[in-house]
Length: 110
Image 1: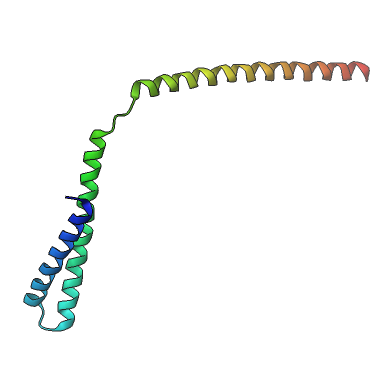
Image 2: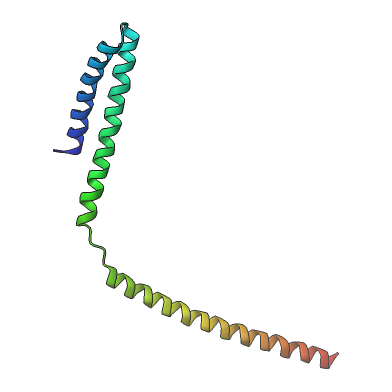
């Protein structure tokens, strides 16, 4: 059964249960209308919750996550990031050495 059809079926079932409950519990038209609409709304929302859990369990079982290839790619990214950090650290050291040498040259000339 399609999920959409299940919602329709459950909503109509809730409507009729709401009418029966409204007739048994209330003695006026407003009470009948309130009971019917509340119970129909509850059945409508409940059917959506049931379908959401059903699709979550059936689709989740069919989906295969490629863990091995994903971990290999992540390891490659970590290696690449470490290489770039080393390159940036060496560039910072060279820049700091150049700044110190420039500072010494400025002191000697002054």
